[in-house]
Length: 568
Image (cartoon, rainbow, N blue to C red; front, side):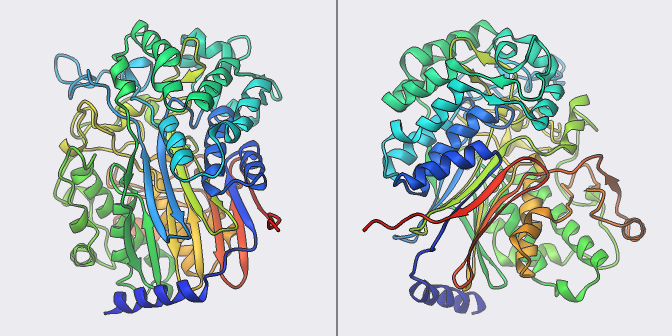
């Protein structure tokens, strides 16, 4: 009954707040991408046109986070029709991929085989998603909206401290491939601050996409170069893999948390399902009446159970029977809540299901403390159209391999499959048969672009951060619930639990020594991180107070709110 009343309230609110926002807003992980989106909006484009420009520009200026050789999820809200849909541009496994392709003859994972080099790359979806957005939702021609990215690739962008950090982390694999070192390094080393990263071949690839759409990338000249280069470097791509790639429009996951209607991504992302589980468990408690330690304990216990379900059940819904309806049902959350004690942690080993086959896949797992690879942007136009999008090439600089003659740096998203049940990927996540490798299958993701709606307004949320994406979006929603500012959404100190490893990971200022001590007395294991993580980009449209936007200060993004003159 409560949910029915909330739905009626939201429907009534549509008519009351039928006005459109007086200002547009953009929040992205890089100022040059924010400027590209703003230029398109001010040139008569809508939020979907701006999303294309931003996606393409981020592919140029954040090669460590996203690119034409990667994929992602674009969550759209078309205001006029009140239509919400997810564009699934996730990578696909090549036709020659198979379940045990990263295992040796003894069934053991071959170190870095799903992370470095051409064999680690899935078939990219970013280009198909941009073309689909242009053809079905945009106002402007693709040639126009790709111009900012083309110009940026031609003239270059200056190296920042963040770029240096990412390049230093992946230096050895970038040095391994001359096609990558020539573009992304300076004299085969980490570039100096201000050094221009010029990508002329990538500019030519973007021009072909602008002229020919999908055919400019998935067929013809570029497709041949991609496949030839991958094959020369022990990869398994075929021309038919590129030709057969398709994006999919999927129905988002929707659920209610108190007075909020939350819309997030369905499989092959785990974000929407996990958020539904966690928040519907937490709504059983009056969190604001509890002390901070109790709030943290309950959040962690809800996270633990959601990530256990992620490991056990989630994968590409086109290949595995993922019980989305059951996992997102309020009664299922109530059942999970029944096993939570207010005074004691439950060890992950006591939960039924998959067990970790190894403590670490290899040494590179240490990077899971960074959480700033992958990228996110949010955009709102003055018609009320919205896009919340998260894109990735997975690990920093993806596979480290750039296809010769294309400028396209390839992803290593094959690592997001379960190479073997219970074997962690580079972010420490384990999985089961639902996420096993199969030809044409899309690997499970944690990317969680999300929309939140109340009778007061709308919010667009999302962030990079590997396995921690879901819990960062969760914490931002809890801040929103407290009527905190958009700046507080993105600056809030963060903690995280993902079932395995069985530890609370937290930023230095997230928990005090006394709070950590109390949590450990309850049975929790904790680990403080060496650095902060995440790069959240958010927008709030309050129907009465107007539009606000914020970019996570942990990195180098930019959020802007601006007016667009109405046509007379």
